[in-house]
Image 1 (spheres, rainbow over the protein chains, first blue to last red):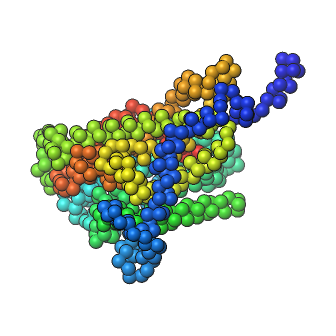
Image 2: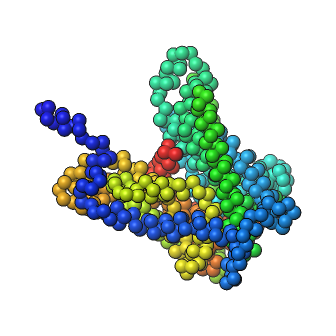
Image 3: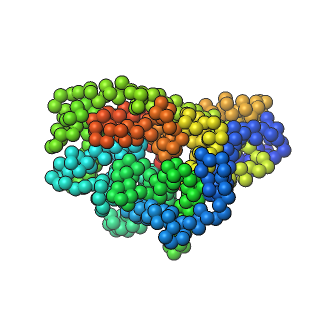
Length: 315
Length: 274
């Protein structure tokens, strides 16, 4: 290779820019990118971008989808939610509370247990991918089938669980049992999903780090705390965030398994919003509630983000 | 060392029992009579294998036309998968490989919506779907679902990782961008396209909240809201409910068994990128 070629190599612009230098792109006119983007952007505009704003507009009206008249309501759909004693505020916050209880109970389990399972699977042995698939399988069944199966298993009179335990526990119709059932079912259903994500993260950890720790005399627990956890940090942040959002969106489990029982105490925020919009025909108020719930969730995500970032700085 | 291995196998097997038992219970119950499914104490194996529940499911009555729901779910899931591939792939290619004015804004806008809680879309999309005349029809559960940003995000990451040399050589030979995209990039991306297709099909097959409120007529439902209806109409006929659950799960379990690697890799890769 002569020096000429070497020189050329040196001045070669970075890969991503090479075939895409502005103005001189080959095989491309100025509207070519837009032609590629157009089909998706039509869908995106219609069903993602417009709805975000349109929902806000709807929330400012008394919006009954079956009436032509949709009178302006100002902020009343929102203020109703924050006026103590109003017809909407009580059930709305009770539903928000149900979602909160479910989230607080399910997220720790869904963050910790799958990590244990992933570590169980993070060693070479025969049948490893079989077990991984086995624990992931419930996730592909979907919330409807899983809820139906668990409603049956947990049936107080003829359910298999009470038969096994020799008890008559009202798993789906009384507290605290209904929460235990909803959380347990959700852990069973989605644990494999988080475990698979953890497992991929564990496999990316450099094994030399463990060797070095061993040489330094670190025991299993110390290796876990000082090698595994720090290396896994970004994956943990991802799992925590995704799990919080998924748990806060809980709907199908309580709609199908406890059906809100007892006394609508397990009726979740999304369940209440859907009822408000589609059973009481008040999409404006449902939209307002959606925005309040969404603000909560975004604040929560931001909180998680900053919590983990602060921890990062301290290290 | 040996104790640790024994412990691991004990844990693996205990978990496996915990994971197989509910699914096995569904399958066994689907083959019991209604009477036997409600027996107390319950029987483990059906005392006689009965096709009563499955016959009712396949008879597909007018109130609960399960086969119709099945067909609708197949169309909706495959349709959504196809629409996602056809729209997201070219868009992701433009965002991965082309420079143009407004690119950052477009990509930023698309990615930002990944963080918008989905409940926001329920009320406005209902109105938009109604304005399009799609209420109570399959397009309502195909196009709004296919508009999600995940596909574009997922494929763009993949395209960026492809080696540039082939594309450059083809461009030098005078190929158009479209030719490069269809003849080089897409064939190289088969695993990513397959993964995205499978994840979309699974998600759509199991979607519940949205189809529950935009589909009404029993004939027009997909399986998820359909099974909800089946449960509402047969609160305690568990043999029938489990038969319905079995019919709804077989396709996704079969798909998972065949394409397990793609699905699991797709999920774990989405985690690493986050």
